Image (tube, rainbow, N blue to C red):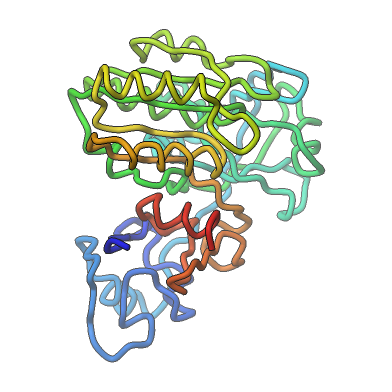
Length: 330
């Protein structure tokens, strides 16, 4: 296995050092992990230990709740709703980059009704965030009760919704392939907008899944060269049609990056297909970890695979390969 270079998405931000510094579980700092020497192999341009000591051995500012008002509610299918929510400019501006997400709940609900949702789109001019939500259970049913002009509470900002984000951040003037299925169309929007702004040519493969609809068509028209609707999976394998189309486009446009927004099964199958080609292609994908607190404390997002390293995936940014192999193999 190759060396795993990792970092923490909160490192060096207003929210670092966080609660993990107090519990001895800091993702980056060896001193805050209880070791006797500084061994910061993943330098993040600031000394987290010094920041912690300077702050009176306390955590920095905690993420707060922001009030929001629903200004639009649209059913794009029987089970998928798109909300446009007006909220604080200070929150919206922090959610501009791919991988941003928030926790949302009905303003009158208890905290355990919070749902983590990828930010699909933002408007800085109007202080609006756009979210897509699939109705699946008690938490999402509670959100479905909300209507236009109702109040919601938003907790954030959070940024670790994509694994391999550095590849998206670095690439410019290149060809890129993006892939999405079902509700994962939502996190795809911020990715293709960002890639497009860096002068990349984007080719997208979409599977509508059980939603039976492409609900990001306007964004695809503006930000991609071409997009194709196809069936990505047949049982637990990539469909022959999709695999042939993808391999054909890899040979044709020689992409520098493939971004996959789907289940871990889809993400891993696409990653293995890429590794079996002769092309050098970077890979990024959605972070499908279950999340509850977003701060690395509750343990919902943790993963330990066959190297026995505990990864707190609400914060830890690493190569998708180390995540997918742990979930699907070990």
